Length: 364
Ligand code: GLY
Image (tube, protein in one colour):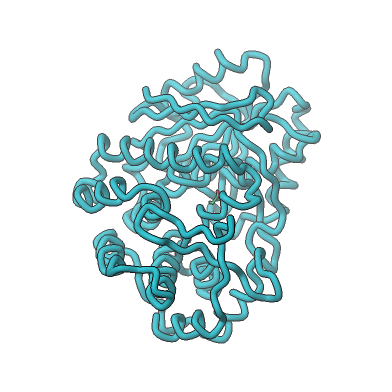
């Protein structure tokens, strides 16, 4: 079992631990009972996770109350789902001594975490991520929330988990598309923080695609180390944490403009290429874009904007980016692989509109 402590002063205990071990899911419930004997456990999951056998593996012979998000996926990432969870908690007389156990992918973690943040003014949550995207990114760092009918994560809170349990064996049941898309958050971590980690991706791409558990364990640890080191310094995204949004400004816009037909990681892959093209236009890049595009292609994700996406709509969505000032967002850019550009102490920088519009035209 690998342990990694994340030190966040906002968390009651001052820190929380990420536990990483292949095949550990069946032992987690006993651990929760031992670590939180006085808390009433309430599991939030979805039908896909249950069908993959992960719910049965987690709870074993125990029979905690379980809320299954229906339908699984982004369509349920809505305030009504949070209301339903909270009313179910109330009907069953759960109180401030609740431990919400989030078992599933990014959507489950975001919804369950947000319900925990607001139920009775906040109860504890542990995250047990079962997808590549959740293990690499969303289960660590305390971003929780649901979408409004207008934008992603319009309702949200920073609510750090009490602990995160990662069993990379759960990734074996993911379909190829979900699996590969989630790997892109790891590529992003390498690009923003660690050139050796990027080389690791390049060298081990076949083992990664074959879901070698040892390699997946190394990736899980590296992702959590990089993410934790950023979140510890800036838990509420005042400045440095923005680097975790590398590739996400264009990525989010492409994801939204596709009507969520593209997965998050697939959209971020396109956003990473867009950021790389911006870096080239601004004279920041030295021939690295080809390497980046090659690894993304090998991982089987799109690297161009699909023809059916309307460019005008895309630009309108970029203008509505939640971090936009005067209807234009700042961009996180790389100086080199493993090194983000910091200008006047800021980790997100201005890029002229016409340059971004040109890149978006070239990226189809
Ligand atoms: N996914 C980016 C962050 O957690 O800040």
